[in-house]
Image 1 (tube, rainbow, N blue to C red):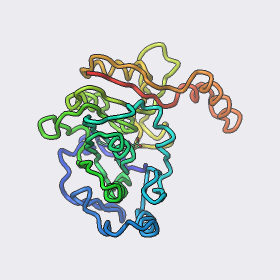
Image 2: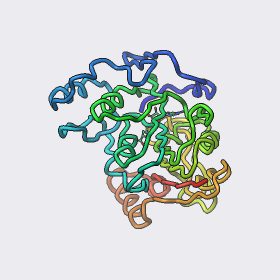
Image 3: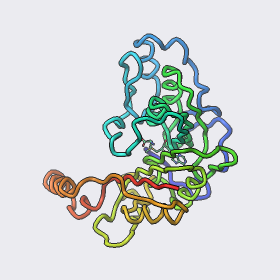
Image 4: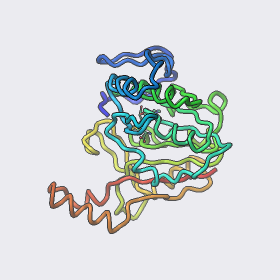
Amino acid sequence: MVELREPPAAAHPASIQTPKEFGGLRQPASPLDWPDLDNLDHPAALQARIDRVPVWHHRYQLPGGVWTKGPFLPGDRLHRIGLPERLDGKTVLDVGAWDGFYTFECERRGAQVTSADTWNPEHLVTSEGYAIAHRVLKSRAKPVQVSVHDLDPAVHGRFDIVLFLGVLYHLTNPFEALQKLRAVTKHTLIVETASDMRLASTPALGFYPGSELENDNTNWFAPNARALEGMCRAAGFREAKLYWQMSLPKAIARAGYRLVRLGANPIKSFNRGRIVVHATV
Ligand SMILES: C[S@@+](CC[C@H](N)C(=O)[O-])C[C@H]1O[C@@H](n2cnc3c(N)ncnc32)[C@H](O)[C@@H]1O
């Protein structure tokens, strides 16, 4: 994701109600309000509509065997986040939903889902792909254009399960975000994030004032597992536990591979990865 750096105040708009446009990308005021969403039953028509979306993030399969066009295959990583097999009768909030893979997967498992995202074209993110999938899947998920920082239980409700996947490291104030998430979580928050400082013996976060993490200047912080667990507890969750992290042998093998193939610093490679923490109320 490419983004212009903004001062923290501008990164947390109080509400997002007007259409936005940036560099040819636009986002309507209402996330589902995109043209040409009818008559997509034929796979060729659906494929042609998918092809017209300028930027996709998720690559997943829609009816008729048609695939969306993002670089990221979330289906391959689904096992890492530990979603219950069935979610019948549960409410789910998917924060940072983007193209909606996790939203529609939770719905498929029986949940009633709300999808929250800033869908900001300035960050090359829109809800066009979400709207197409929502239509062809006949989804009942409710999209809400809101920043995590503006979540309010009185306005948005409270949810049995809250997903916060791939968002934390993009925020200048991740701790405040966890506090906001605590207020809308009835049972479990699932956080998936970039991680750093695996070798540190204390809770620690990496801080990236430039594009030091994945060459992406929208990445600010990456915690180790102990830091993320501690932040969740400090934000008001009763318990927080690491659910997934690459195993030690695999992390060592990956660091060795990156050293040989890319000349990458093996300590840095070992320290960095992804983690998933489950925090309960
Ligand atoms: C790397 S993508 C992750 C998408 C998806 N959750 C996944 O894991 O594949 C980050 C998403 O977070 C959204 N996002 C960024 N800042 C946000 C904020 N303050 N509140 C809500 N969503 C935000 C972006 O618009 C984007 O859709």
